[in-house]
Amino acid sequence: MDKDIFWKLIEDAKRASGPSGDIAGSVSARLAELSDRHILRWEQIFLAYMKMSYKEKLWAAAYMMNGGCSDDGFDY
Picture 1 (cartoon, rainbow, N blue to C red):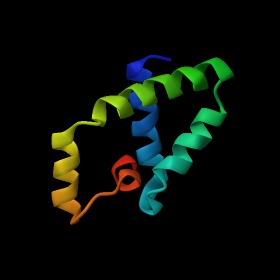
Picture 2 (cartoon, rainbow, N blue to C red):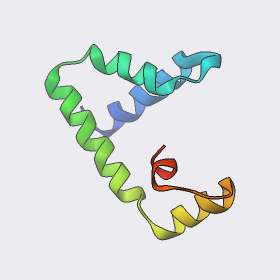
Picture 3 (spheres, rainbow, N blue to C red):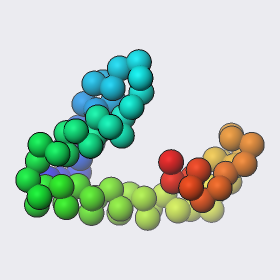
Picture 4 (cartoon, rainbow, N blue to C red):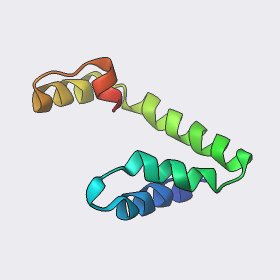
């Protein structure tokens, strides 16, 4: 698992989620098909991107666009 495969998995999940938009469910289904090692690596990449996203300016933009932004809302 590397960053390119990480993003491909997400893109494939977006396409497969269709009109329901259940991207998280689609990602989960795809991860369930992988080995434990690949799942753990996927999580490490995911958490690294989440950590990088915690920027004051990005949170401020989310706050302005959504009329408010809690910490959970920012994560989601």
